[in-house]
Image 1 (cartoon, rainbow over the protein chains, first blue to last red):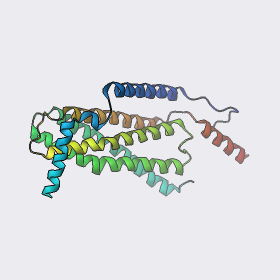
Image 2 (image 1 turned 45 degrees about the vertical axis):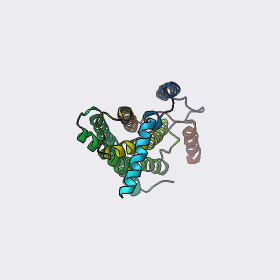
Image 3 (image 1 turned 180 degrees about the horizontal axis):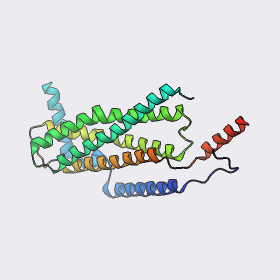
Length: 63
Length: 174
């Protein structure tokens, strides 16, 4: 039990953790800015998407 | 709100089981994602992505939600609290992050599984999406291992809120 008069300082491991998270977030933002949007839209081309829609339609027709 | 010892132990079993199973399921998912990316055999690649879709929907998503909610019940139902100790708070934030990334990955996983059903699918198609699945699975596995490490070591450190609560308890007991 902590009986000090003033609140304890933030532990060093939390600060290190925070720095790592901030660096990773910055990397994510930089990649985001350089490479366009993140997520499936970034990886799937318009042709792929059109193919996917055609597949879905075909699947619906079969069922 | 404090749980009775019987309920607390039951919830602890649920939490540990779901959390550790989540790690195992993501490890399996990663293995499949690597095989899906590297294999030259189209039949294997197709089977892999169909399996990954099933694993993610029926195993990984339920386990992640069970882990998150049982963790919340554990924290609110015991003296640990959710905002009193840094390790609990960091663990909670990382679990939220892992769950959000997982939910965002559902779309590309289902997409590639739907494409894999098509007989014209070849092992060379959609390399970027498939590489993305490997990267996200590896990242997710790493975050889950960090969460597990925090749970075992429970590094010291009380938040301001936790410290205030401790002081209130000391005053009440006097």
